[in-house]
Amino acid sequence: MTYESNPVLEKLPKHLRQYIKPQNYEEYTSINQAVWRYVMRKNVDYLSQVAHSSYVDGLKKTGISIDNIPNMYGMNRILKEIGWAAVAVDGFIPPAAFMEFQAYNVLVIASDIRQLEHIEYTPAPDIIHEGAGHAPIIANPEYSEYLRRFGEIGCKAISSAKDFELYEAVRHLSIIKEAKGTDPEEITEAEEKIDILQKNMGEPSEMAMIRNLHWWTVEYGLIGSLEQPKIYGAGLLSSIGESAWCMTAEVKKIPYSIAAAHTAFDITKPQPQLFVTPDFAFLSQVLEDFANTMALRTGGLNGIQKLINSKELGTIELSTGLQISGNFESVIAYKGKPIYFQTKGKSALAFREKELVGQDAHQHATGFGSPLGRLKGINIAIEDMSPRDLKAYNIYEGEQVSLDFEGGINVSGKIITGTRNLQGQIILITFKNCIVSYKDKVLFKATDELYNMAIGETIVSAFNGPADLKSFDLIDHELSKTITQKSDASETALEGYYQQIRDFREGKNTTISRNKVFTVLKENFPKDWLLSVELYELAVSNGDAEFAKDIKKHLENVKLENPKLGNLIDDGLELVNGIKIKVQKLSVR
Image (tube, rainbow, N blue to C red):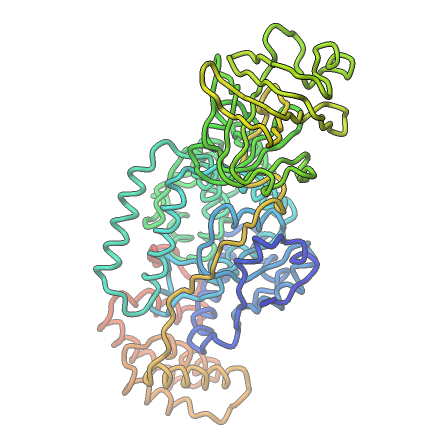
């Protein structure tokens, strides 16, 4: 156990716990804390004007402080009051896992924090985005249930084989972009790879479409009227530049609908349009509309074909409720309906998400195949036959039978026994000396090995992942550490001065000479601007007008040397002077 658990986290399955890492709060530097404080002061000042009312209220309810990076343990003590919890993870985790955490009411928080050089925007998930963006809004009960339900449905979405490749490429780019000293050529190469992948994804998968819904709601959602929307999306709440940009007329506002699932996004650019939901309840309505299009609810030939294309562990559920989990390899169809399916490798059978006794991955270590549908010339499906019907058709223990299915599948062998569900339907028939064939091709043949034939007329559902989580060993993730570099002597010295000023502001050590710190800062760290802003704040609060004037003059020189810092410095000074940040002054990203 590398984290402090609680009743919510104790319900997490093992395969999700593998993504959790300790927060290691003591590793945050004084500069990290200053970055958090600067961004949060800007956020609260500006977002109080444009964010949904749940945001400011939620900051208090979820234990998010303006002055200190949130401690996960402290957050959890407060989050449990609204039925949620938070865990630290290492950057991007697979989309299905991310959503499954949500299904368990657990907020995943990338515990790293952006560098000062990337204070306005970082391509990597960080605690500013996750903690200050996602956490406050979940205090709203309607939105909280939407997020949980989204996770529940989203983790069942089927991916394409290319989705994971794109995820890995994006994760790699986010790591090297945030790492100090990365060769620009390496970044360019990574960006080009993502561009090629995005242009060759083919037909969007269910996971791709539900990621679109997630992006346009959870990350970049607006709420209210088209004319005067408010912000609730975490991506906007955690980026002061983008939250200002989205309020301008340059960004088209569109009524939220299922069309958002088919609207792609580019994570590297400002969004040209955003979707506006009238209220949080409408989000759930659209989510259910989308879920109705998923193989999770439609099943059929299309559903199993999606699983085959995904090349990932998935499950089909038959009309009897029998669930088959494995890597689906092939399907035979007849008149647009599946009549035989085959998995490869470890497979398992379950009913209502509970593995059937004797039908585990050891029993089916090399795959599982079975016919589907009705027997030829018989109007009643096997699953609807009563014990008397089964006996009348010779489907009975100890009988040697030859069963011809519609579409050409034949199963011949001696019936050993049958397995029924709680409603009394036959869901499995076990054969000995069995041969399964399709036309002239033998699909299965064994003399000593028993054959279990699944009973089900149709596939009613197909979804990502196993039916019973205990059927498979899902522990396959190693924490791939994001690139961190120890501070050099100069950086360590600068961190020391940030800490001195932090201690002074918090009353821990008021004997520090702020003027000496300022002198050293000008001489040894002329490019640093954030500590000067903090010194300016202390000078103004203490009524030291001359000192404040000197600092402001220095900051003007810093702006001349690096014009890109202009808005950041100006906004910092205006916060100190009690001036509301203006939309037109904010830069995007």
